[in-house]
Image (cartoon, rainbow, N blue to C red):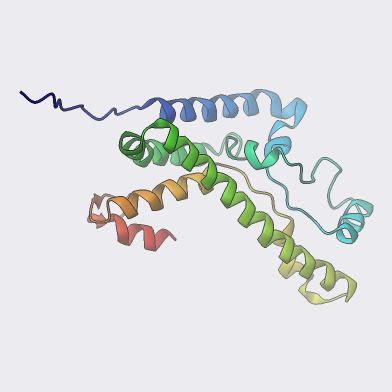
Length: 202
């Protein structure tokens, strides 16, 4: 007699559930503490800026001492989102985490899924920091040359905030494992295969 038993997939597996809870708690803390403690500003991921450019920006009050890269931001930015009233940011990210993350966690198990999720978030942060550092060097050169390109590279100072990097990794993994599954995307009139959706978003 076979010992095989069908185990119904969990619609709210523990890692996905706890990640959503943590993100919501961060959001509530931001809403309560932002006005007094500027919590969102402390949690977001600021770019690593070349020393000479940083001196100039601080000298002319373009940035403050608190608006600088700190190592802990690599982790905290993944759990913080655009503050109220921009609810769409956290709602979209948490819905996407539940939609695709629960399936991956059921397939991989909680430990593997959590490791993958965090590595995707850290990897996205590393890519953001590298890109912003390169652009900030271009901004510095434009400032030193008094070039009209200064505005073009001003985005080099933009920080990162939210779970989007980690969730994009989850979405890509889902598309890789289930390339032919049909997805219904908001404002799209018909279903689309996961592999094409991933390519479109990427």
